[in-house]
Length: 140
Image 1 (cartoon, rainbow, N blue to C red):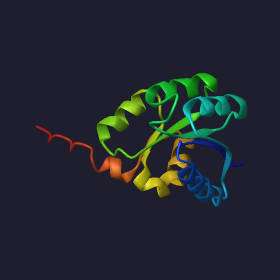
Image 2: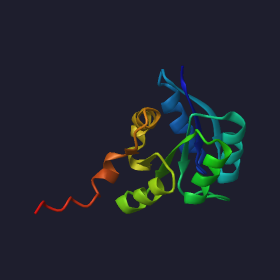
Image 3: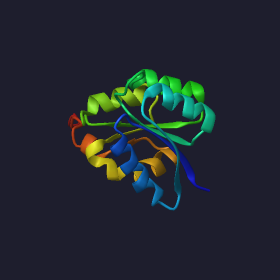
Image 4: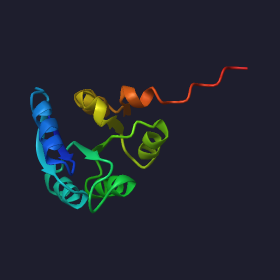
């Protein structure tokens, strides 16, 4: 059974590139694409995908508000946030808001791995984001 994905990004060319990459995966199917946050929520409500991959900043609905709306539209949906920002603190805020993963656009080739991870019940942070995490303080 394939993982059903909705892609939401206001840049059509980027969204189509992601779709083409994901469609080459034998276990992933892109079932819908949206160019703004409200359209994405409507697709999540009507298509009931397993995962929504969403740009963090989009017209009409963005960030943590979008995450809450996706989860309200379909409680079982996993949310992976896509962003140009690789700051760990921002990724942590999105996870705290209910996202299951955070991938930078620079690490977009990580999306299949991120989708598989969140479908397995794990949180996923792309390598670029993990690299910005503060080092653990030494044990005393």
